Length: 155
Image: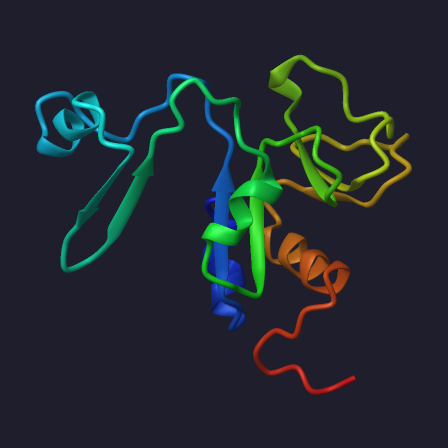
């Protein structure tokens, strides 16, 4: 996904990414003022600089938020790439690595639309892309999502 972002941006698309992290995920560091503010009970802490800003929102004791809860907090873009949130009904391109030891996707999830793999998957019933062929994966995503990349005319 990291290599896919610049490929898509290079085609003129505005792209954002959302990643589902583990329960104890934290971008903050102990000892920093922002960390201390949160530890003191602040519901939200914003950290900002000339280059970026981040907003950390504590939902004390709350359950994990869904994609539908989170998307309204994002700036609108042409494409939102999502990592995780496997149970959410959105179209998915699954990454399969032979070294991962798991079997390739069987098609149990009707929202899996393609697979990127580091090994051939001759029995796959979905489009399969070489994991290293980032331009082909980007082209598939653009077509599947019916996006207009830079240099493409109207249909």
